[in-house]
Length: 221
Image (spheres, rainbow, N blue to C red):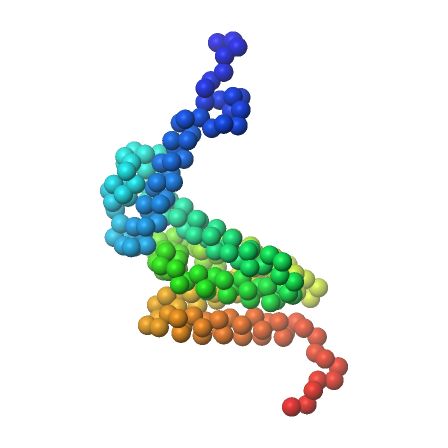
């Protein structure tokens, strides 16, 4: 009808419609319930019925928001990745260190996050079995990979090709993923985490040493 506007139309302004708000609440409830259940029980032992009951929604609402249980699991992983990435960016904010040191800092933040039960179970352990890797370094590292890639490019931009920097970032992100899994599976996670910090520092330090020019007169030992 001429002169009328659909109540759900964006032409009414930036205020979301009631339907959109309800959809957002449903999605948030499913994500919250899924994170809790996947953390407590794991992906395999959590059913779609468990999810809809815990979220207080219908099965139809679940499949309206997500194509299947794996899609919901992926969305939970994305949330966790965003939280780790935000922590890494917070740690980097105002940091005046060189790119190599900052790259190590990002890896340390990721390894530190393995003390969280949701990161341990969902992002480090179950994601390996549930989701196919998007990159050689693993499914969990995509945003972290992008940050690592940028820092690797900054660290070696005058000495290597973009392809080398990408592979370097992929290798370091993959190493961080493998170390995170080792920490989560260890009998002494806290001790294993400290060892993982040391291993990662050695890996980054070794690559850094490869590219940094040697001093003209190195000191005698």
